[in-house]
Image (cartoon, rainbow, N blue to C red; front, side):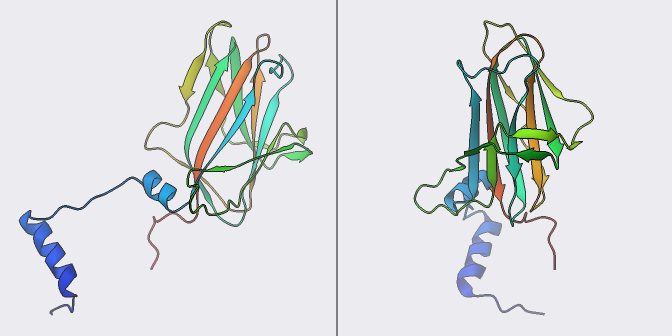
Length: 192
């Protein structure tokens, strides 16, 4: 059975099979940036706003009408021991609205995500993991940890609420939280 394929497509595939053509490929992140669908946030607790022992701080992450695929999480800190926990469906009030950045400043697509910093928490919600992430270091040293390995992603459903809770377990310290994500349906699994 012969397929009715346009000539320019047939020529492309013919060249690929014979080694006379190349396909230029790019990563999802590169494509997402060009499409205006790759976003980021920064939440910082610097000198003058440190995280004190026994006084956890938080970031509330609320998805809108689209699912979210978290690509990268990076933390930087100066302190002896921090723990980071993620909770689902916290109960909270207030919080400072954070600006969600878009890497595409030419044709950005508006975000569907709302982010709040340092909300008043009345119930943490349900822990996402059975144990926190811990970050250790000397009080005079700066550490940087990429907490989501390359090639791994976290899929977050639409219309959901998560809390990132950061605590200092020894003294006080400075902490920086960076998150990078895509908003929209994943291309896999393919649905027909």
